[in-house]
Length: 387
Image (tube, rainbow, N blue to C red):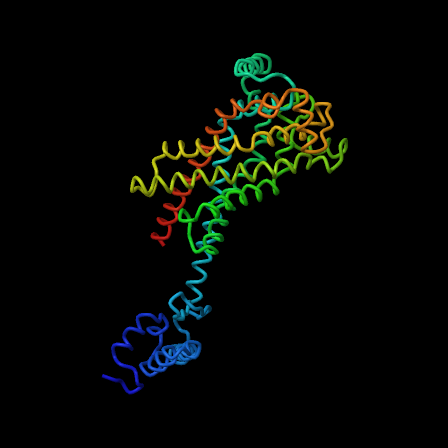
């Protein structure tokens, strides 16, 4: 049966279900005009009809204003109240804040847990002494006897100053890059295809490294020098700037960026992939904490192994001012290290310790981030319900 405006009742009802603005129109007459205009492809006119109806018949008394009009995938037009847009913006802001907080905590917990091993690794990386597990243990033990237990965490304050913003930026950037790449490629989150998944991790690591690099250099300097040389972080900045120039604060920047691209890319890619495979095989969306630790350990093992030679190079270049060397380029540093110590013993010095330290640190980092994110989202939902 045809209605007066030429549309059948079935067609009218079907279209009404697809057009959100239809039910918002104040009168039957305005609804008829909205439907007819929208059905004939003149949705902008339909929206205008409905907007005019709202303004005329409601006087905007309900405090809701129309702010966005856009096409959805099925070709229908959507009118979004500004309250909804504002709420969506608030959720995005909270998501970014949650990522920053979770990332900062994850980085702090992970680095503090492995700080003694990390300091020992750096000392071997920047010296010509041969590395072995036995020698590493002796170094840790001598440090404990001569300088006390807390000396094993020397430089950890500089590490925290660097790692908290670094981890916060890296994890937050990763979440944002996943959304952007997912939107671009038509996927979201764990459904990202392998290449975008790898790219999101690399971009996140590069972003964080570029923004926090001087702090990483300061941390390396404090790890390999005695207390008398640098008493605090600010003194490192001041002395380096005066004695070696401001440019020295970015010494080793190039190998850092080249190293972080495969490291962060492979780490995030491996962790996200293992979680995706786990969900498909087990049917559980969220892995148990020990499973997250295991996935993170695998991610750290692969990521650090792939980029380790560049890690040695950057440490040599960062500490050149206090070790008496003049490393000026990546290739020059590699050639000098290989000539003095050999390819494996030089460029992969301390890798076995990194196979212990790295997986533990990355596993703790990823697990802490995920669990903190889950906790913050639950607290946010509870807060929203109470409102």
